[in-house]
Image 1 (cartoon, one colour):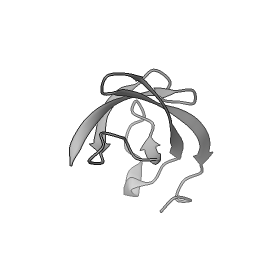
Image 2 (tube, helix red, strand yellow):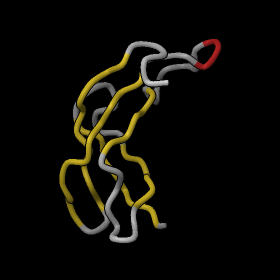
Image 3 (cartoon, one colour):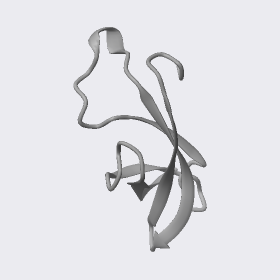
Length: 77
């Protein structure tokens, strides 16, 4: 399994660029749950999670993931 560069669009992680795992065809996951990258870790590991979905290929090995929804603390666990 390889990796692919993804830019998150919309929501709390707008314009964040990360490397995600890719399937054998070089496609990132259809959905990805992300904690806000600038938020300090909450006691006990809780905190809101943000759901993003694969959007489109923006270039060679570069994809976008669009914001879908924010889950309150503990909802996605």
